[in-house]
Image 1 (cartoon, rainbow, N blue to C red):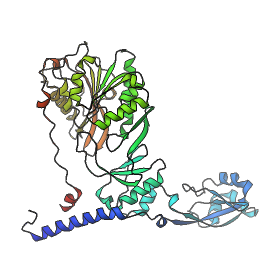
Image 2 (cartoon, rainbow, N blue to C red):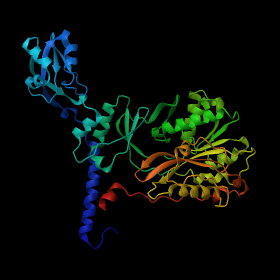
Image 3 (cartoon, rainbow, N blue to C red):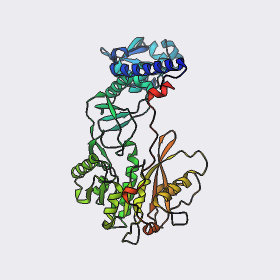
Image 4 (cartoon, rainbow, N blue to C red):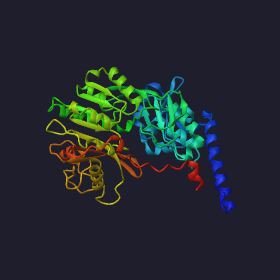
Amino acid sequence: QHFVKKDGDVIIWMRLRLVASFASWLGNIMELDRSLLSRKIEVIALRIETRRTGEYLFKLRDHLLNLPRVRNAVNCGEKKLILLSQRYTDVSQIIEENGWLSEKLESTEMSSEKYTINLDYNHFTADEALKELLPTEVSIPSSFEQAGHLIHLNLRPEHEPYKKIIGQVILDKIKSCRTVVNKIGEINNEFRTFPLEILAGENNTYVILREHDCSFGFDYSKVYWNSRLSSEHARIVDLMNNLKKHNEHMLVADATCGAGPFAIPLAKNYVQVLANDLNPAAVDAIQYNGQKNKCLQFLSVHGPSCARHFLREQIDSKYTHVIFNLPATGLDLLDAFRGLKFSSNLPPLVFCYCFAPKDNKEGTLIPELQFRLQRALGLSSSDDTPHSATTHPLPPDSHRQATQFATDGFLAIRWIRNVSPNKDMFCLTFRVPSACATLEPILLEERPSPPAKRPRKSNNEEEAK
């Protein structure tokens, strides 16, 4: 079916596929040659008595070399050499700017000479090394995520031929790193994990890290973790700890707990937590982390189970707070509250994370999020759907802080982070509306699945276009 009428189109398509395949093959065999990265710098140096080093460094502080990771004063036998800025080619240029140095030259207590600095691979930072090693038209990887000893990159197609070199440079330059991995596919499963390839270092994806005074251990390739959300984890944990002061019977249901970024710190702070995840590897991880942090007394691990099953089965537990930390489908899971009747007078407070496209049109974001929430809960516009008091595309600071939840129907929306050029992450906080209790619960087998994403084209297909 690829052989269309225009033969030229077919030839171009095949040629691009061949180039992309060659780039991938080349990226697997290219190795880093550290000897290629060297530089010589010639500067003016002043030879002085060692005991006068401090005085010279102070008097000439505006004229020194000041090159990162290179000392301004180096040993030269029993003497010291003071290295001057690269902008000077002769000592006479400094004398014109500094009269004090003119007096020292006349007293013959110092002399000037040329000095050569040899910079090798060890001198350069990761960015500096990659800038020297990669072609000028190839961008330097701008960011990465680190979890324990593992560094996770999201390399672009242009980096494919040089991925091994990039991985080795990062491994060399970041002392806490022992493994460098690259994401080679999209998140396409219900566990929010993605395929990885080892670029450099140990073939070991089991990480141990610390966050919020807790220790976590899990297999990074099997359990989703995002270190960029550490501040959000801390915000929720601190908020819960403050709320516990006014509610001795607080019980948190973490419906999509992962390795426990919320559940473990809360349990360690004596908050009772029910933790559940659909991913068996995550359930094993949080059980281990609870034991490691000595907080199993306050942590009850369930699953692997769907968040909907978990919340309905635990209704008698009288949970007061619910966390949905699954932004891709978190809002869809809220239909679990349809038909649930809570024994306490105050329904649980919900923290639900979700993705939303960037708001390019003034005032459309909050109505869209309210509509999606209303649809998931099964409420019409006449019901007590949680609502925000603002009509701006982002809520004011008082709403973003999401600290006041006294009334039924109040919705706090907090911007969390930018996920991609066209997508942001938000946290919706609200109390389960009382109207949900009057609805008919949807049988689990009848629950609609979220619309499937259109498969993303591979790099080769995109290049073929």
